[in-house]
Amino acid sequence: AQSVAQPEDQVNVAEGNPLTVKCTYSVSGNPYLFWYVQYPNRGLQFLLKYITGDNLVKGSYGFEAEFNKSQTSFHLKKPSALVSDSALYFCAVRAYTGTASKLTFGTGTRLQVTL
Amino acid sequence: DAGVIQSPRHEVTEMGQEVTLRCKPISGHNSLFWYRQTMMRGLELLIYFNNNVPIDDSGMPEDRFSAKMPNASFSTLKIQPSEPRDSAVYFCASTAPGQLPRQYFGPGTRLTVT
Image (cartoon, rainbow over all chains, first blue to last red; front, top):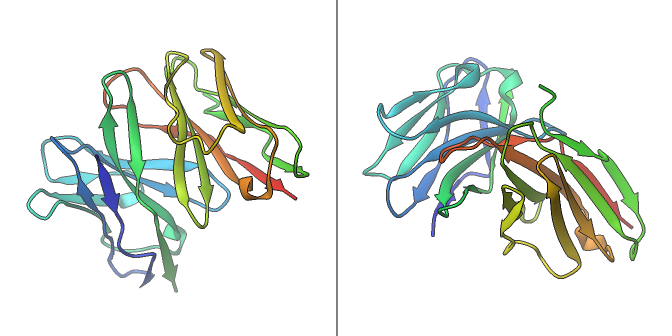
C-alpha cells in the first residue's frame, strides 16, 4: 500500500530564510507525488506534482520540490520564505486502482513564518 | 469556473439529528471524493466515486454514514444519527478524467454536533 510520512508537525522559519518541509514516501512502482497547501478555513490547494522527468519540480508561489528516489523523499522547498506562506502543507501519493485515482495524504506540516 | 461548491459552509446540530452535506463538483470532472479533517486524525478519505459509481467506501467510519451521487453534478454525504465525535470539517474534491489528475477541493463544511 502507498503511504507518505511527514516527520515534522511544525516548521518554524524566519521570513527571508530558506524553508524545507520534509516528506518521505513508500510505493510499489513509480511514485506520483503531490504537495498541497491549506490556508485557514479553506480547502486544500494544489502546489505541484512529480510524475516523471526532472527531479526538481517547480510549482505555485515560488515553491519547488526535489524528488530523490534513493532516499524515497519529496521535500518541499522555497529559497526565501514569506509570512504569507504560513499554512498547513500536505504531501500526497497517488494510488491508481484501475478505475480511478485516489490520493493518500500525509498528516500535514504546519509552516510558521515569522518576521 | 466556480470551483467545487459545498453547502452548507457551517452546520451546527444536536446529537441524534440527521445531517446532509452537499457537493457540486466542477463541470466535466468525473471523480468525486469525500474527506473528513480533524485535529486528531488529520485528513481521511471517506469515499470516492468514479462516473457516479462508488469505488471505495472503506473509509466510511460506520453505517451511520452514507454517500450518494445521483448524477455527475451532485453528491451528498449523510450522517444519521449524528454524534459529537462526527464534528469535523468535511471536504469534497473532484478530478478531471485521466489517470493522473490533480484534485480540486471545495471550501469544506464545518460540522459541529452538540
